[in-house]
Length: 376
Image (cartoon, helix red, strand yellow):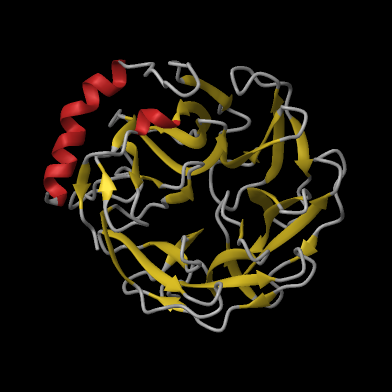
């Protein structure tokens, strides 16, 4: 099936997807899709975005996200805010500041990672200038009650980007932080390229991968990682080339293959990939790249597709957010039992306000039996 026909299927199902609010999940008996706003944009806090969610041992959910108060731009003043839910995300408690602004511009882009040891790592970006952006990490040994002082993951000069909800731990115990880098983010001559920071001691020390991944035009951007069943690591890459690209590491993230097209059409927009509890891969992305449309306006619809063959083929995409009147991006994926918990920004077209949406969807809702396309 061609890429165009996949998008036509999505368009034909938009009306039904927009009306449907439930789908019976025979495994947990719940037919309900829970949908709410974790944080709504206001005049004084115009952007709530780049979040992550983690399940705590007491049954609560902890959500953390970028809370901008200095405007909606990437370099505006911001802190990392957080909130907890006692009921699976149906309601959220009062927000609190998880990370004060210790950057000259802001802190942003939260990633929450529970280690095999049970500890939780909290990653975020410290932004000082267009040539100085670092990834920092804090540690909690008591399930997010107290946190260590921030530690730098990416030393040295330059602009190190790690999206929200990106850090992973391999079965071996190695922790990987996927980074997109350039010397000066505002320079037209600066092409972004990807590498990975690795830790083999629980996040206490870090080293940079031997290889760098590069693409044409603006470059390789905002990578996401997932460990494959054979032990290889798959890197998905945001590009300006009309689709997601990918690279493979066979040695735990140190060396990487030359990047290739993934076969999944997408605008210049970040995609998110993770392994489901039943062993499939779930990819959440924007599925179209119409010519002449800017990368921001093309970030709609938001869809999810499953693969049961490690990304070689994908199911017919299910529409998570159908409206062409808004954009959706910077998704986090968390699995809780047989449910998929998502956070992502929601920005109505023509505005500069970004609210953080939350959805809890039965995993069975995504289906996965029908193959929509064979990308590679």
